[in-house]
Image: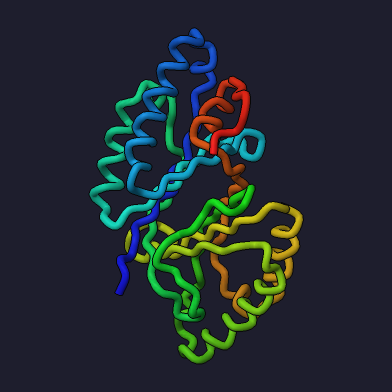
Length: 229
C-alpha cells in the first residue's frame, strides 16, 4: 500500500499590536516565518491560505502534509522560533491522517490542494447512531451523498481522518473557484439521509488560496507587485 500521510491544518491569529511594530521588524518576522515554510516545503506539501476578510478569529492557514508525525512536529518547533509566532496564537488546529475511503474508489492517501481559488475547511463528527447502522446501510446512504456531490464536478473534495488523533473524526476540505457553487452543494447535501447523522460540522473556514508570502503580507496590508506561484 502506498504511504499514508499525516495532515495538519494550523490556523493563526495575529495580535493587532503586531501591526504597530516598525515595518522593518514586521518584515524580519515574516521572513523568518517564510524561511521555515520554504524549508519544510522543499520536500513536503505546504500550502498557505489567507482568511483576512473571511473570518474574525483566524488570519492565516498553513496546510502541511508528511508521511511521519515527527516531521510535522519538527516543522512547528522551527516555526515557533520565528518572531511572528511571538505575536500569534493558534485558535484552531486539526490533525488528521489519510486512508482509503470505505465508500469511494477515489484515492484518499494524499490531500491534493492547489487547484481551486478557495478552500472550504471544517471538522466533522458523525453521531453514534451512524456507526450503529450496518455497513450496507451506511454504504447505501453515502452513495446518495456522493451522487449529489458529483452534480458539482467543479468542487473537489479532500477528506482526512482524525479518529483517536484529534477531537473531530474527519477534516473535510473542499476546493473551488466559485463560492456560490459550494454554498449550493452544501445546501443540497443537507437533504441526504447521511446528513441526518451529522453531529458537528463547525467551525467552517473560507480560505483564499495564495502563496505563503502573500498570506503573510495580507496580515499587515503589505502589497506584492504580482502573485507568487
